[in-house]
Image 1: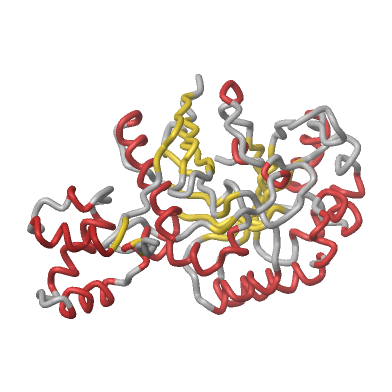
Image 2: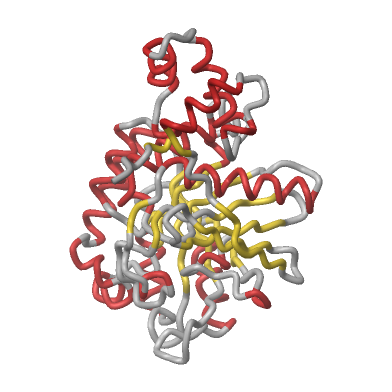
Length: 346
């Protein structure tokens, strides 16, 4: 039986250098190959034009490059681009390019399916198959950067981890991907232009703070009342709001970075005065802003878009307490560019 080859991008630059030395070559060859893999996004060893044929053949016999493939791309009337991304093992995730007049944002996935069970989310209906590797996350960003340059004549400006999966349940791989995205040897993007969105895993939020990350944090809150929140997101019964609050206070004390709350308002679920008052109180614990999100119904069940009056009541209450609040309208409706609530983020 043939031994399964290792994906070469699982190796650090130092490991690549060591590999070449161990095979009788110079260490700098590892630097060359590393640049091809990350800086130039090589899809195959054949792409590495300044590496000798013999070296390319040696790499081919020892390693693979498990590059993603954009299986299907759809463009919306509003300019949103949705990618169905096929992974090396045949599984598929989604990523989306969301343009505005001033920037383009990549919305990327971190897991195939999701670890969590949010009742309103289409992705949660898919059980988690596996975590994405750092290179699979990185490749999504590279693909969207190319689309941004092709369709909008400028490089990708922002990244949000709001696609399929819970990023903090794939912690190490997400941080490794961000390390490469922000590295001068990768895409060289500023971490300030990256937002990681979590459904709220307190101990992992504290770990982010301890690891002194420089990217931004968003929390899918959806209710500041425990009973309502656990109805919307059953897993959150294990993470009461008191624990989430404590982890966010810890985050802010360590990072001085304000939190964004993602908040969908649904009819007859969280569109009442008690819900509004609870959110206002929760927002006072740490400096924050609130994105009120238009909901894309995934069926005709209990989760339905709230009225404009309800949204306006939230805005009025938040702004009267000097809390920054914006309404995020759904994008790419004509191509159904939603993976979970993915289409709603911009």
